[in-house]
Amino acid sequence: MRAFSAGVHLAGIGCRGHCFALAVFERFTVIRSIETLSPGNAKRLQGIFFDIDDTFTTNGRIGGRAFQSLWDLKDAGLRVVPITGRPAGWCDHIARMWPVDGVVGENGAFYFCYDEEKRTLAKRFLAGEDLRKRNRLRLEKIKEEIVASVPGAATASDQLYREADLAIDYCEDVPPLPWEEVEKICRIFRSHGAECKVSSIHVNGWFGDYDKLSMTRIFVRERWRLELDSNKEEFLFCGDSPNDEPMFRFFPLSAGVNNVLRFTPRMKHLPSFVAEREGSEGFAEIVETVLRKRSS
Image (tube, rainbow, N blue to C red; front, side, top):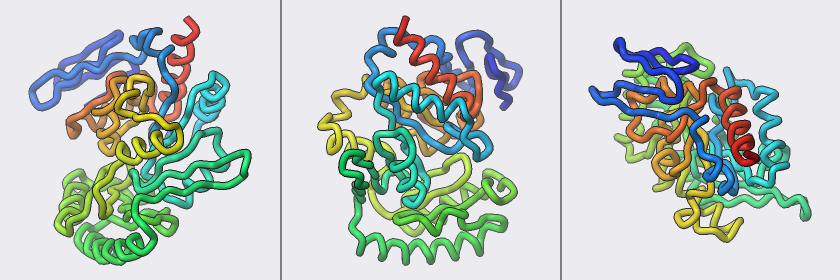
């Protein structure tokens, strides 16, 4: 698959303008350009949820326009919450230091929220400390099996800062593995009864019935006194990879940065809209479009 700024070309089939046509499993799936977001939908938004790696970043770096976009959203009165697979240690920093209203981390294992008036960080884990400790011991055995069975796979460099999951690096700090090897990592996780999701850089595995969406529901209910299922049309989610599928499936308004197109043949649930640009530039494009539509 080749992705272009104004469309996608696959197997001799292309589309230009405001739609991106993808031939997936011998069918066409059309993802509209973010430019087709209606002013009415943009004006109804209360906030934006977004993934971090390769959505808010490009090649591991946060672009200046993307970070400024967070301040622009806050200045416009919108709520802003990253929903990420990154570890608790990173999320502590994000909740305290970024212009955000909270953060959901480790694919839904917890949320953190900083109270600026009290100057305290609220931490809400789905599993208690004792259970997390027991699960980490179980995950350690899975890690040993994966590293022994999948040459080139490695424990993610941020594993030391994780509370609830195991992150296996398949292309962040190691040479990219073939997709067949990524699938093998997933099979090993599942053979032990663990859940797993593939991001743009890691395969994350954990014990527990949760994902990004389930903890986002809890966050919205506990911090904002809202039922997300009754207000989902008032939020937009931005993402880029298969571990964002629960969010793409749930939110009527969801947007992918352009690099999401690399994963679409392996995804069942796609975003409603797509940006012309990749990574952090795509995120900035989405935010700029939302704010422009709100003011029109």
